[in-house]
Image (cartoon, rainbow, N blue to C red):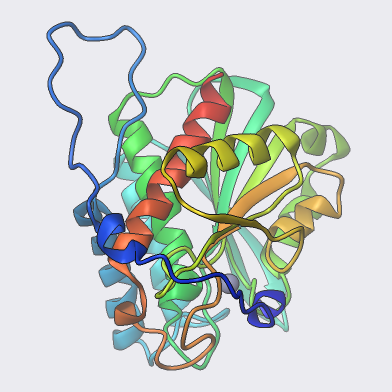
Length: 295
Ligand SMILES: [Zn+2]
């Protein structure tokens, strides 16, 4: 993510780390079950196994999960398997780049108004120089844990919920551009908003950097973080797969925790992801997606 690598924010460190780790494992029991399920929570223990799986895939396949590699193919198979077991309708969408076959993974949650789609995505590929755990195993795991939590909670959204894991982002947003290009104009109009998550578990996080574009999603993100007392910064638009959607006139939002350390480097391993920050981020993905899809 080139734009972010130039951004070094000057806000003071707020000593967030300790506070971030404390995320309740489950809502307490209620004497009477509410008719509408509450927004569920995801715990660190439900998120980190996905990152451990992606790290071990990279370790087994030559150290990275880049476009055209076994590491990417196995990452796809892992994420698809989790989604299939959780009841999503998954499909692999092939594209070719640099003469090499790549894929996007699309997962639809059955139901909801198909003319009003909330699409949530993260790029699953890494660079060739490292395993890509913060960039972007973190976003991939946050979106995956959110999708599974929604399935477990039996979400019945008003809008249609779709999740995506993009290929070949690191080559220049190739997978997401291919997806948007192949949508007919009518298909593009049905996407109410696209939410992108690229690097969500950075160490020494200072702010949650929110993409300000779609007004409703921007408001929900800002309200979510404000309610938790977490600082945000308007990152504007661009720098990752949401650009492919924005260029096609589709409203976008999302957030990142910034480039952190080891960007595009061999040291972007699982210990380069802060579990507390990643847990806060995954719950923000979940909470905001839930609100946008169900209301
Ligand atoms: Zn990235």
